[in-house]
Image (cartoon, rainbow, N blue to C red; front, side):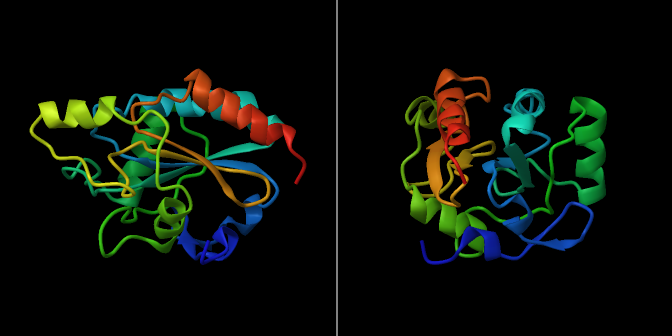
Length: 183
């Protein structure tokens, strides 16, 4: 990994400069989110996961992105309000960033380089193709709600396609495996 994930500059949904440093020693599930996507109801599952596993050391981190058919057009304030009102989201949200292409945020550059292949590969690509959308080539993020699991040691432990739901046994097992490890 070219850059320590904890050192990459980020901005909270409220506009505060941050890094992942404050989450060091925790297990992180990093998700690129969107408010107007067919997968948007995953917010509910992500919040449940956060509530059930937070005490054990899991943090779910939402990164809004407008990279896929303009499905996150809102301002940070609108996104925060939408998440709160519709899904009672309490997990940390960050400001909108780019997760694909030449202007890809350094966090997503590091994540996709660390784990180029996603678990659950196949069904989402076929579904997108059915809508006439060509999915991004690997290792790019395929669509909204792709998930990266970062272990307590700061290494990317796993990656899941957008259609692998937050309550999928594959994600739950990977999270539990990482939570069982010491920092």
